[in-house]
Amino acid sequence: MKTKKYLVAIAIFGGALFLAQAANEYNNNAEQTAKIEKKPFPIPSAG
Image 1 (cartoon, rainbow, N blue to C red):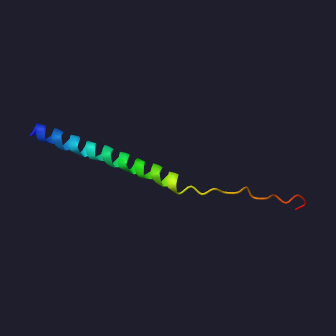
Image 2: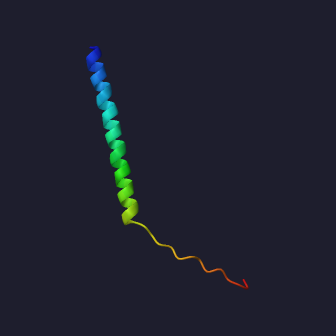
């Protein structure tokens, strides 16, 4: 029974690590493909 609890705990922990890594990779890919280049806002001189 003790071994079963350890296996379940390791499986849950491994799944959480896998999901965290997958989410991180997805965010990195999304940032690389969806960058928006902004032009500086012109400041009026005599406003």
